[in-house]
Image 1: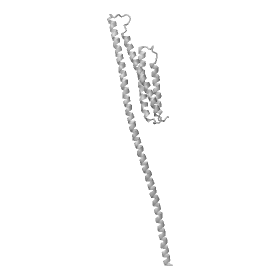
Image 2 (image 1 turned 45 degrees about the vertical axis):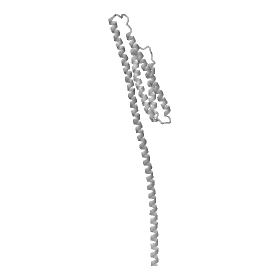
Image 3 (image 1 turned 30 degrees about the vertical axis):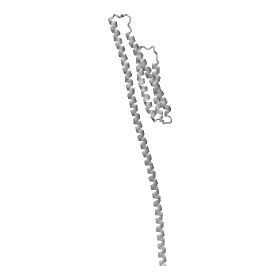
Image 4 (image 1 turned 180 degrees about the vertical axis):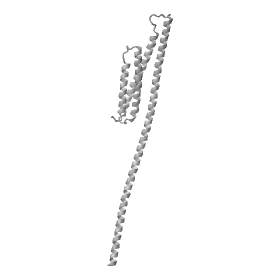
Length: 226
């Protein structure tokens, strides 16, 4: 398992590229698809855009843990990913609007066999016009929902980044406290070692003095007895 500080960023970037490859294929797909096939394809593109947006958010979070020495090049890669995502979102929005307009125009085109005076034909055209308007409103609502979801995801990512920064500061403060405590322990150990050394020296001096006194007492006693 790769435990390098850039491993998760690289993984999210790889997933993002897979999503954008699929999105590009669908957006640049066969233009001869009928309306329903095109709608289904764009719905899948919308879901994959949400997934790609999530990958970019994760990359934005992971870049905070990359060492400063190599972070600029990863910032450039993140910037390129955001630019690609924005371009695909714009293309998706344009194609959705184009499809809605095409459906609206198709619904307003008179069908063969009906005249403008035919009440049934006019009723059917109005129904198709209303259906096209409803489709356009639905597409606009989905785009608004996607935009709101992107904003919410961005806010959550910002909160996570703030929490990570706070935790990093707490860890750094704890590390500084441990270093201070370690230095204090080293100084105390040196002090104790010095005190023990002095104690042994004092014991040696005291023992030497006692030995000299005993020797002098023996000499005095011996001289008196002799």
